[in-house]
Length: 301
Image 1 (tube, helix red, strand yellow):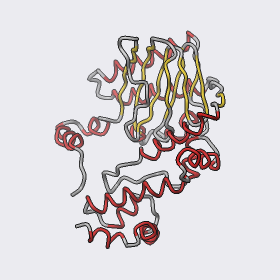
Image 2 (cartoon, one colour):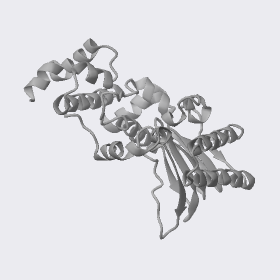
Image 3 (tube, rainbow, N blue to C red):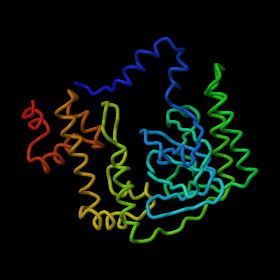
Image 4 (cartoon, rainbow, N blue to C red):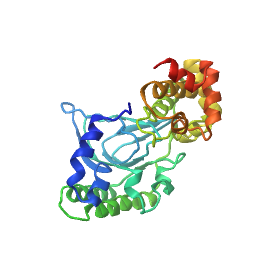
């Protein structure tokens, strides 16, 4: 009954022959060029795979938005994003070029905590405008990444990690672009949209080892860099629901699905949904369903 994706099963089957160090790294890093013209459009939305961090070199006039903040740059910029801060950007020029790389937190296991760096922390502005010299320097780093990942060098992922750290340290020496408040008529809608995306990124739960990280309104507010009361007012204005209602309803939806479609025990499901103790999950479930998780599961067999 456990939900396993066909893609994951494919990789589990096909990677058996690979050396251990490569098996650990496969799927944890990639790098891509960006090239967009009026006749060759690219998707400029975030890289939406769960758990991925992203660093982008963007060339071309662009407007960047997240929560109630808006930023704009004219020529080129370096953008950092993490899995817990949804955002979007809009091309203001007909053409855009550049590069981006994506990687997991696990890619840096035993090499420090990537979340300790300010460029990936909530509340910091992750966008840095570049001059021509900086743009060229960073472009060379991305080209080196592409060359490394296409090579057969045994330690290529170690070399790539060093290049990612080089980008981070270059950015820490730069001054972030100042943000401008977004028009209030659009701010509530944008915050609601980004909150919903941030909530949905935690689902579906596909393994008893996967646990949601955000379960309380203050945690979402911190990741969106807004005050928790501002988040609540925005959701209430757009949807009529409070932040707590939104979160509880989505957790309940996932709880019902896991009880019906997996054979995980209830303690495992409780942990996956972010409850520290099983009685807390049982009480939470009973408030919504007027029955215990065990009774609900038995009635849907």
